[in-house]
Length: 95
Figure 1: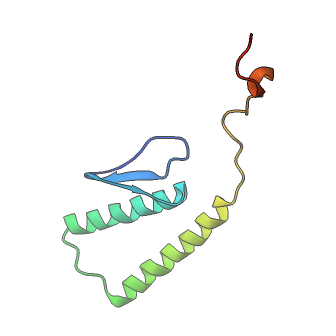
Figure 2: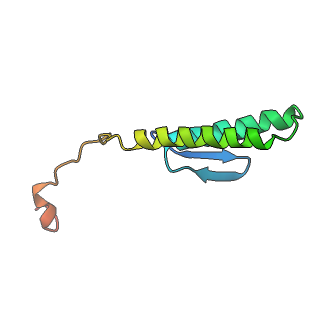
Figure 3: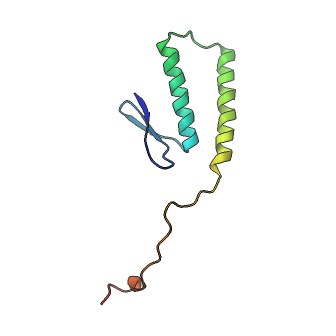
């Protein structure tokens, strides 16, 4: 069983009892897609890939990773705004 962990910008996923984390949400999606593709090939008894197919897979993955890393640099705002510290925060407690 392979599943995503639910959360805002969460890059975690699990495969059976093993927990994993990717460097980004986009990378998590890439891992899950690759795992799903492997699972389908194994379930359908697909023959081993040729050397040419492996090179094509690797090229497609590199291209996708380059796109992901371009998107990872997009600035996102915090979900919660920073609260101002109460005036008494510098002292021990209010009187």
